[in-house]
Structure formats: structure tokens, C-alpha cells
Image 1 (tube, helix red, strand yellow):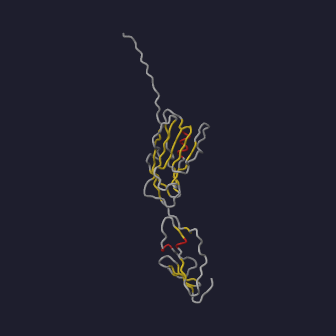
Image 2 (spheres, rainbow, N blue to C red; image 1 turned 30 degrees about the vertical axis):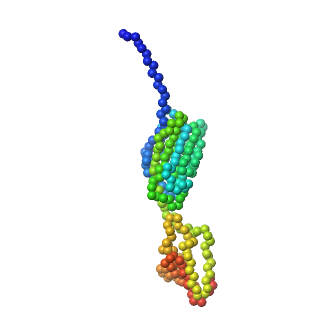
Image 3 (tube, one colour; image 1 turned 180 degrees about the vertical axis):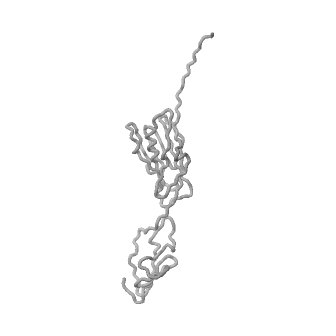
Length: 239
């Protein structure tokens, strides 16, 4: 037998970065639908994993390609952070980029990330392309995870026309036997579409049909440009 020789093998610690993995409901690169004037939770059930660290120190959630700067935002909240040792500071809430900092458990960071919602405040949002929202975290060794991304498809809703700010001309004056024309469209605005003459309707009180409305003191006619022409009865005067 030969002499016994001993070799000492030292296992050097190598940090494994955290991972953000797909969930059953919202997988990576999944496309969500956002309807105008509503919000959508973008990471509702993602999963955080780390083989050798129980804490995280950083996270960022961002919209990578907002079309309407300042009007396409992310929001989240800290209500799910309940651990006495969890210290998370949230900055950038209600902007396109949210940052979380501070030592806290994976569960604490996960609760905040899952609360992240995307909302567009624009009343006529661009719908021609998908928005991309992504999240990244770091562990106590400052090792970054992978980016986890989802797509958001924006749908418009039709907004009703609204009266503009300047005062509506409640009282109009015209001489006896003299017609008067009123530009009705200038009193209203529609953020989705330019108002067309066909959008003007005369309602109460009405007698007659189509574009001609007979009132007790005269006749109101809707013109091709959307204006109203009031023709008083012969020799009528008063209100």
C-alpha cells in the first residue's frame, strides 16, 4: 500500500441571484388588456425565488415605452408589508417608474410587486401598440434578477361630449321678424372625435319632424353646418 495523501477541497460560496418566474395566470410576455379609465394589475401572482438569500434590498417596476408621458403610470402600496423587520421605502408611486429599497423578506417585496397596477389618465389614449411593463429585484449581494415583462394592450372607451368652460349664451336677442343663427357646436367638445353637424339634435319642445322644429313663437331649423336658425313668427316679440 502506498502512503495516504489527503486533499482538502474548499467550497467557495457563490451567490445565486434572485429569480422572478412565471405564474399560471400571468406568464412572462403575457398580454393583458387595459380599458381606458380603469387599471390592470400587471404582476398579480408572479413568484420570487432565491436559493441562498432570504432578503431583498431593491426592486424596480417600470413602463418601458409610455406614449403619453406623465399620464401612463404605475401604482402600488405597502399594506402587505407586515413583518417587523421589513423596511421598504417606496418612491415614484403614480409615475412610470417605481423603486423599492430597503432590507425586507421576499414575501414583503412580493406583496408590493403583486399590488402594482397600470393606469392611463389620458382620455384619448393611443392604442396602436403594446405597452411593456417589467420588474427586477436585487438581493443583499446586489445581484440583479432577470427582468420579468408583461405586455399591456390599451382599449379606448367612447367619452360623451361635454360643455366647454366659457359661458353658454342662455339669452339671445334678435329684432322682430328677423331670424337669428346660433353656432351650437362651439359650446361642446369631444376628446375622442371632432363633433359633426349630424351630432346636433333639437329636443324639447318639439312639434313637427326631421330638422324642422316648430315652437310656439317660431320655427327652429338645423342647418347643414350644425347651427340652429330661429325664425320668429311674423310680428312676434317677447321671450
